[in-house]
Length: 327
Image (cartoon, rainbow, N blue to C red):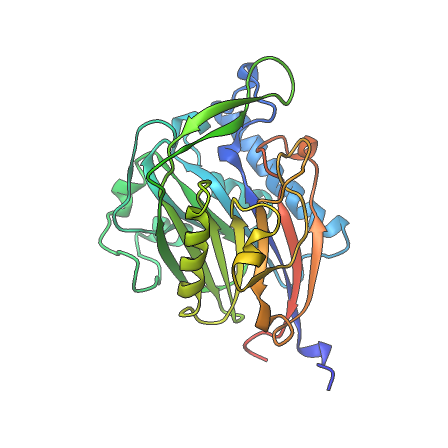
């Protein structure tokens, strides 16, 4: 029997590795160390994400969730701003959640956070802790933590969140030489830099509508990222609701679908932003769940690099139609 569409709900979900808001191509004369310039770039990016939902004809449905990776919080290199909050403000998403993976600056001096914690507008404004899963430490002084230079992943949303969950994924003990946008020698050039791996986590929002959205940024080291994906899969089975996994998985050629029971729902090249040829960023569901819960997964190419001006990744987005828990 066909499912009545009157009982269906739709939301737009987006994933974007923002490269700590770095200008692309890098421009030393127009640095993102300027608070005013940085705020304008981040809020403008959020506005354009929202505009892309409306202009594409998909609309925003009942609401939106934007998952962000490589985000700075109080970092001098990015004008000591809360990047997740500013992108959310630009997209008119009032609720933000940020989970730091380290204290310090990636590629420079940093130390890991022993007990994962979530910062959000709810606990920063009221000095109350979020309703978080049992594996999240709640004895961390939020006021002291937010004074540090932090780096991690986050969410912005206008949907009601029931609970937040975190899973530590570890890191590779070895690093690799990686390609980065160069700040000299012309447009869209790259340079090879050896980078040590950093701690990785998965951050999940359990929404009141019955969906649980999992955001992650996996290691760039081969096999380590596959191991981390399997850890998320085992953890996700214990989480409530129907799960959607999204983020920068650092696995090309649809390997996440081939190496796990997750299935990619959006086929879109996302890296490098100036000439996308590789898909590192994914929106995925469990194979067995797609027909039972989700009636539609509509892929949407977002916007070009020239419009966003920041990051070496482009966003990936989908409109999801499903039967909410309350119906």
